[in-house]
Length: 448
Image 1 (tube, rainbow, N blue to C red):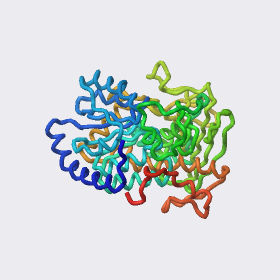
Image 2 (tube, rainbow, N blue to C red; image 1 turned 90 degrees about the vertical axis):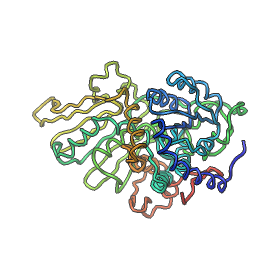
Image 3 (tube, helix red, strand yellow; image 1 turned 45 degrees about the vertical axis):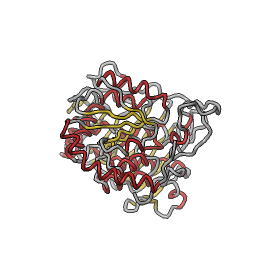
Image 4 (cartoon, one colour; image 1 turned 30 degrees about the vertical axis):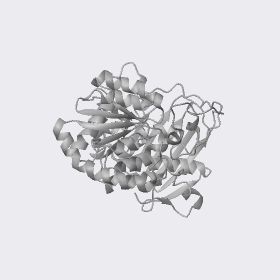
C-alpha cells in the first residue's frame, strides 16, 4: 500500500472537499439517500451497521478496515438489510477521495478518532465518530476546530443525548423544582475481567499493521486487546465507558469546565500490567457545585440497565452500575443512561422511605437508543444543524475524563485548570499530558 504524504493528501482532500460540498445537495436530492462509508467494523462497527441497515434513506457504499478479514461479517449485515454488498477499502483515505460520500462513520478504537475525524472534515465529509472522543484534550480541541472550519456536522456516539427522556430531565432541573444543585454523582461500578496479553506473533496476512496502529506506537504485533492497558492507545476502561454518564451529568447541570480536579484510586484489583486504574474516584469543583465520579471494575453486585430482563422498569437505583444522581436542595434525581429513565425523590429526615414524586420511563420513538442517535445524525446532515451530541459538547465532557486521568498520572494531585487556555495553572508536569504522543506520519496537525 502506497502511503500518501501530507502535502499530497491535503491537495487531494481540499479538492475533494470542494467537490463534496457541491455534490452533496445533488446526490441527496437525486435519490434522497445519504451515502456513507464506515471505518472500523470490529464489534462496535458491526453494532452500528445493525442499526444503519434499518434505514432506507441511506446507502453504505464503503466498508473500511485495516484488517481485510473484517469485511465478510460486516458486508453480510449490509447485504441482509439492503440486498447489496458495499465496496471494501483497507485505506480510509480512498473513501475520503470519493465525492459521492456524504459522511464517514468512525468506529475504530480510540487512537484513530481524532485524526480520522479531522481528515474527514478536511475532505468535506460529515462525521459520526464513536466515543471516547480523543486520547487528549488537545486532540479533542483540534476536532472541534476542524468541524467549525470546514462547516461539518460531527456527531459523537454518546447516544443518551438523543433519548427524549434526557431532555425532559434537564427541563425539570432548569425549572427549579429540584432546588439549588450543589452535588452531582456519576457512577460506573461493574465487573470486568483482566486484560489478557498474548505473546508476540508475526502480523497476519491481510492486516495493514501501520494503518492499524495509526497515531499510536507501532509495537510488536499481538492478537487480542492487549493495547487496552496502555495510555498511548486507550483512555482506560472506566473513562471510555463512563463518558456516557459524565456527558449526561454535565448536560443536566449545565456546566462546562471545572475549576479544579482531584483524582483518587489506582490499580487495586487486577495484576495484568495495565497503566490505567481499575478503581477511580475523581472530584471536580464547579464553583458552588461539586461533581463526583465513582468507578470500579470489580463490582459484580452492580447491574447495568441494558442487562435487565424487563426494560420497562426502572433500575434498582442503589445497585445501578451506570446511574447519575443530581442532588438539589428540594429533592434528588436518579437518571439512567441508555434507557434507564429518571425519577425524582423528595422527603425529609422524618421519612424513612422517600417516594418518587416524578417518574419518566425510557420511552423511545425508534427501536433503540442507537437508532435514535442515527436519526438525529442523518437529519442534521440534511438540515445542517448541530447534532445533539455535537463535537464541541462531546469535547467538554471528554475534558473531564482526561482531567481525571491526568490527575492520576501525576500522583493523584489536585490540579487547577484554566478554561480559557485549556491548560493547567502553573503545572508543567500535568501540562505535558494535554497532548497525545502521535507517531509520524499519523500526526494531528496544529493547524487543521
